[in-house]
Length: 456
Image (tube, rainbow, N blue to C red; front, side, top):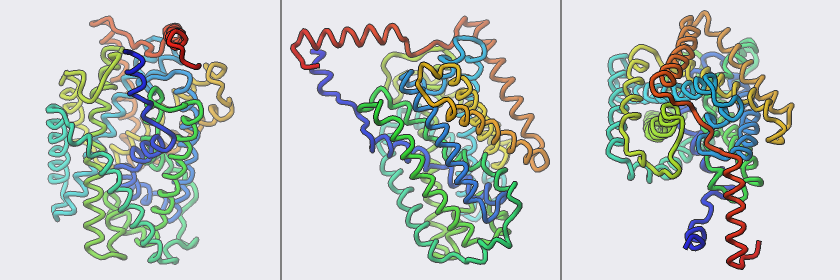
């Protein structure tokens, strides 16, 4: 009976299906939010910021892929933190911080949705931006409470729409660029290009979802790292071309003025009002789908793992049958939307993600013999995360002086939650991948195959 079950459920992800999953996760709301924010900092050399952001993402992807192969688990980064730092307060706090990072990212995407919709309907004021942002958050919270089967099934179509529009826009807009806008005489200081890398790296976020497929991947030893590098590489090419198209069509003062919806504004010179509206609607679709997908991943998986310290053995969409994580998460997102502007939310989200991934790569160095990864590449991944974090903080100390306090507050809140959960519920975040259990399961599987006369 078990044999038939295994045969009927082949591994879902081959090389290219994993690549497209990664591309779909990366090319979401990030580019629609970041292109204007980063362009306002780096000017017409923001494309270099995307190049460096892509290199940083490749280094991070390499390290995470190696960890995924050694510790296959749907717990993802939280699992790697526990494996690297053991089951303690530090890894538990980092797990809670990772959950908070997901909430901050959702707040940034919701705020971006509000910006695009407000400008599309001609009511671009803070009141309407916040109202639309809270409205879309409430809508998808309700959808997830009911069980969003239809929305979940529509994700592939949404990925296809946003990729098609972005590729067509970029290809056509490159034909209309004004070379003088990209001239070296208009270049800002090179340090500004480095300051923008934290934001451009945020646009690549989503590549780590590939590691969550490891248990359902065909020949992961061959396909995991390849799919990770291919997905990031292809997205980097798209982002670099898109940034050149945007900065080649819009003067920097207009980029700065429209930084919260610059990608739509950049379509106007070449394609007129219809181009602007089509790109704005695409941004709405991309941000809405990102909110829905992120609400599930963050409120179901990350929340459950952060609170309970463990995940059920088998799960599917909305399988936990608990609305607690969804409601708590939505309530935590509301003040972020109301009291922070898009630049602040995006910067905080980028910095927290950089720090959490930096800690993950630093921990990876402690397990380097087990994973078989290249020490220098993992060390570079860790160094690049913290270097970009420092550069971003240096830039924001004048433009957004409250950012360090938000970061410190996030860490303090994560530590407080971790200590409180340990004190009142006795829970600790546990390893999802058990070495001995894995070996035993593998041995039992081999014995079953031998008994059934299967060729090994």
